[in-house]
Amino acid sequence: MNRIPAFFAMATLGILAAPVAADLYKTGGGSLYAGGNYTFVDLDANGFDADLGTLSAKVGGYVTPYFGLEARAGFGVADEDVGFDTDLSVNSFFGGYATLNMVNESPVTPYGILGFTRYELEVDGPFGSDKDDETDFSFGAGVNVAITEELSGNLEYMRYVDTGDVTADGIGLGLTFHF
Image (cartoon, rainbow, N blue to C red; front, side):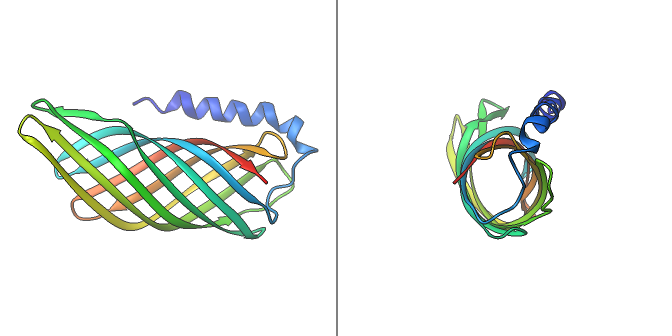
């Protein structure tokens, strides 16, 4: 998958939104939020290397301007043929996370995120299907870019799972609504 154009699209969005949002938005605060992400997932599982896509919803809130709590849940929307008429996909995932936000006066807020994620994977082939689930410590980093006071976009990298058999990394793009 080519992730470079998506990165440049988000960077351009941030540059275009910055002058408008600079007077409207100070990052951080004590607000609740909800949003969604599309994530390009790179999965290494038992010798299979696959590029998958997921959609997820998130809800959370800032406990302080610098610390937040968040829950996410999602499902796979793009699977990959891994050979011999066999598809690998993400059935579902969910997790709980803490965010550490670098609050500032600009419309751009960098953040770190850590928590736990449970992934359910499925291999579906001509001889049947098999499901496996993995739960692991997750971590990542991202940036929220204010578009208006109530709406922001985000770009994020996450290491969702890294067990002996499965590694799942993702680059996500999303929108968040602040209440």
